[in-house]
Length: 355
Ligand SMILES: Cc1cc2nc3c(=O)[nH]c(=O)nc-3n(C[C@H](O)[C@H](O)[C@H](O)COP(=O)(O)OP(=O)(O)OC[C@H]3O[C@@H](n4cnc5c(N)ncnc54)[C@H](O)[C@@H]3O)c2cc1C
Image (cartoon, rainbow, N blue to C red):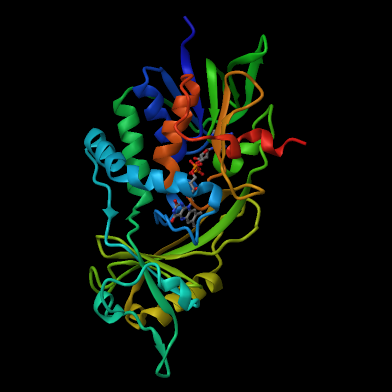
């Protein structure tokens, strides 16, 4: 007998993996089809800031960002529980260094900057360089999240086919009948495109996603917790991890599907970090990489149903896919199972791009 699933999730990034778990919880038999290895694209490359700041989030996305940020501790707890893997979720907070002194009034620092981050250098020849504000944002190691989500999905008997590229979603009698890959076909009445920056390449619809390249470098801090907060400055951001690593990011480049790092660019990022925290000059470089954010023409994700019955989409999360994963999974789960989604998905419909 040919095996059949209730739903096929295309792409095993943080969005596809979170959704596969959600659909499994709703009682669906789920297959995830991944062209490479699960969790090795944008979700592996990300910094993991859970940005929930009106100044930095598009108005249409703010409610979703706040709701998803609130879901994070429980999301992480469940994944840790089901996977038996540890996820580095930090709640120390974020210091935003800005050239706009007005921005600091709404979110003052709880203590002087020199006490919060003694190694952070905020003066230049005696003059203060930046105004500083404090946000109670969390950050997470995205590689921990995808590893735990993968293990949790497997534990729940979600099926996987890796190294298998979906070429198109198949339609019979006007609705989804399965997917065609470069190796085989899989049968299901529901398919969800979670293919990140590649989402537009899968027939029959051409979602207008594009890759936005981000280069990053990771160093080992001279001392664990030398920097404790996430620090965002105009030219660079610093994300400390609990094991003593620090991720320094990131560029935003229109460079097609090119994931190569450029030594000069990595050096510039490192230097910008040293300008903020001079002791980072002693820090050993561990790794440099680039990843492809799934961008869209209006910078908003593409979420919900498509014109083909049974075919859904959850992509285009651009800079916020790690943050938005728990809520995206919940909302798309609701749409697929015929429930009314908790938030209005109107602004995120694929149809907004059709003339
Ligand atoms: C440098 C950088 C820093 C970032 N920092 C942050 C941050 O601090 N906070 C935050 O929230 N977000 C951040 N992001 C954004 C975040 O990484 C993305 O929004 C998120 O990972 C998108 O998840 P995804 O599952 O849609 O995409 P991906 O992780 O790219 O997953 C898509 C998957 O689909 C697979 N696929 C593609 N085409 C096919 C096909 N035809 N058939 C089968 N499989 C296919 C791919 O191989 C891939 O595994 C950052 C991104 C980058 C690059």
